[in-house]
Image (tube, rainbow over all chains, first blue to last red; front, side, top):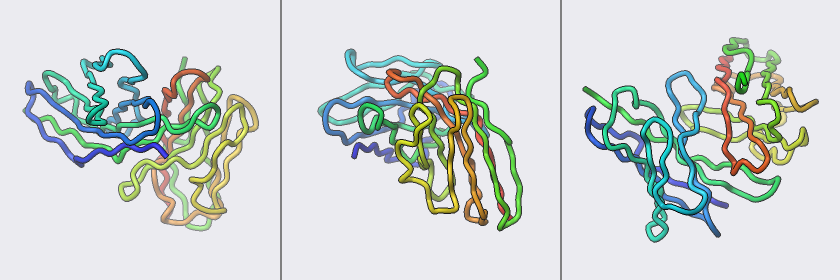
Length: 115
Length: 114
């Protein structure tokens, strides 16, 4: 089965500083990778995905992610953090093909941005 | 589009009672997923459907849980009888065929079993 790992339970960053939320993956074949964000008392929202092509993927709210095949990583980044970015972030990978296709999510990383 | 709709948003019930959670997926989406989120276990996939047919229910915790999708616009997740350990937020999500697995989540139902 495919899997992703998020090694940090929480990331703290000051507003205006760059942020990175880490994700590594373990897959057979070419990975389909995703980032989702969950704000308090809300469902998960899609941020961005990597399917193929350019290793730097741009998404919503100024976020981007870098696919690194040699390091099997897909870290989420933003050049300048905002307090409003504080939320729970999930990395996910496609697991299965065809109709038996689902997303396997990581354990989540809580991002706390402070003034 | 209104997005994925879930009802109720909050449910408080007593142990032993039957609980039914409802979901309306985005129109035109072929897949529907039910997840459970708790602090202890994180986000768990319970079951998912393709064209109203259950594809994988291996995440359903036990026989007390059942899910149906009688048509393309409606699904239910039922717990009978409910137990305090079922307290969690239950999410429904849907996606379209060929969408590279991009799922759209509903707002969730927060279930508390006393």
